[in-house]
Image (cartoon, rainbow, N blue to C red; front, side):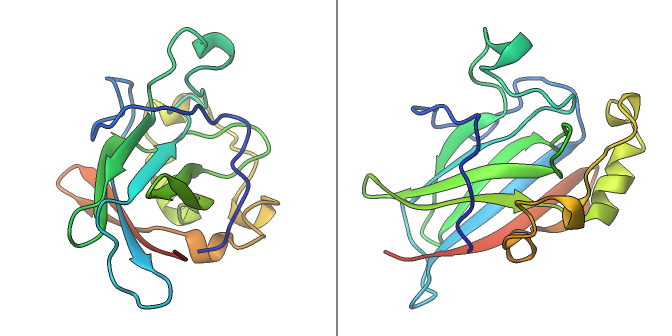
Length: 178
């Protein structure tokens, strides 16, 4: 996995929890992040996957108008014996100048082994954004190829997405160096 910028919206000390949506509107999304040793491809058990992203309206908790709530769309999960951490959230929104993404850190034994961002195929985002609440904010101005951070390794950080019974399931395997 390519290292990428943490971004300006990280808050340390998030809660260990599977559902991070906190009732915010949006298309349901299950994120399945698998963490493996980059050298051996063996799963890493008990790695902590730390994610954060904006809501459907492009707002990050803890900042701007959402400064009073520091928890929606943020959380941690430990990987199981197969190296998998699962989150329940909503499909991320967008904000000017950035393509749709989820920020991620992987911690093992108290050390950060990876900081990056996860991206979505533009065709899937287009389909999701045709419906409310995303359709209330038309004119997304940045697609994957136009995003400066995506251009620096984003294609290798793109999740695979499938639709399953009314929700999207996004999966990615992240190889980290221990």
